[in-house]
Image 1: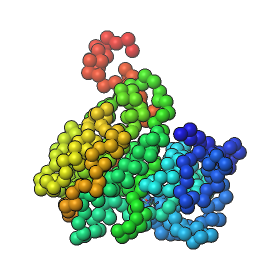
Image 2: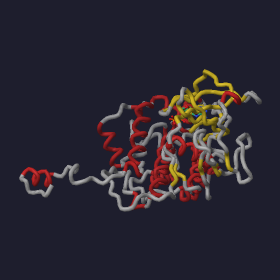
Image 3: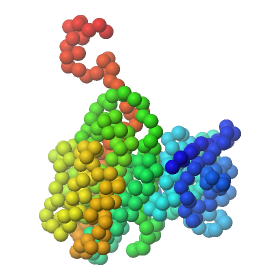
Image 4: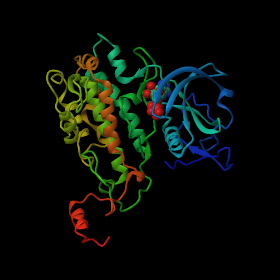
Amino acid sequence: MGNSFSFKTPKDKTTRKVTVVPPPKTDRRERNSSGNMAFHSHPVTQDYRISRNILGVGINGKVVECEHRASGEKYALKVLRDVPKARREIELHVAASGHPHIVAVLDVYENAYNEVQCLLVVMEKMEGGELFSRIQERGGTAFTEREAAHIMRDICGAVAHLHSMNIAHRDIKPENLLYTEAGTRGQIKLTDFGFAKRTNESEPQGLATACFTPYYCAPEVLGSEKYDKSCDLWSIGVVMYILLCGYPPFFSAHGLPMSPGMKSRIKSGHYTFPSPEWDCVSQAAKDLITKLLKTDPAERYTIDQVMAHKWTQTLTRLPDTPLCTAFNLEKAEWPEMQDEMEKTLASMRVDKEDIHIKSLADSKNRLLEKRKAAGKTDH
Ligand code: ADP
């Protein structure tokens, strides 16, 4: 895609430009002829009225409502400290922002508050809440496999867009899938690029990774590009599983609290399709889930394989029998599930800064300890 990204901060007066995919219709950002986006350095309050209405709280701070002074339209404003990680998040979110199932970024400001340099991201306001809250709120209205497949097609469309741009999101989870509007209308969109990563950037060569979990193989085995993308496919598998039954595959089945046994199920990649809720679900759906929840990332489906799979391809012919999803979601222990999904995703993310070689000095090696004690090592 040839996306480029550089900034001009108030301190250094160098060029700043971001090459992006075609912007959404509502995008107000200044652009030059090649489609590059400029960050504003004038105060955000010149253009927007900041509300006290908090839309959500994330690990990096609050997301608040704001109103565009000229149009009166409402938006969401995310405030981040101006650090390299935040710049990477914004760069990747902006780059992906043109897709109908990715939350659009409208404006970005570089402002200082009490001498702290901040980045302020104006996004479209998602009024419809999170994916599973919405299904839960439907109450008596039946939720069907056909509907689940439509939702999955939208989510996978967003991921296919990202992966085609060589961006891995690496934090796809229910809380980051939001609806534009409340009620039955509206579009589902993916947000929060806090862990997103370019997959075509070179990684340091020849480094050893310290530990292995089952969802984690050394990036040099699979290649960093495929490895980072495979994390998103695992997430898609978990979201699809929950959509079809109302509880996650490895975690707290039927809303029971997390037990040590469940933790080992996550590690061994062991899950089932329990009766009765899975009885009416198509074989094609179960087959796709199996391909997505592979423990070994090398065996896991790619997004192109998902898009070509029978389940994704035959949307209108899928069963419209009601699922148990809404009923089971009601009983689910969400905070525990979210916690566990977060931890598993964290174990799958392997970054340059996390990769280190264990030196002999800090290695826990029984033989080495014994030799040290006997004074047989050279160190
Ligand atoms: P963090 O990266 O700090 O975790 P998020 O981007 O996930 O922050 O946002 C935190 C919360 O704010 C989300 O869980 C959601 O409830 C809310 N939120 C985020 N973006 C929007 C938006 N565009 N519209 C409405 N609410 C949002």
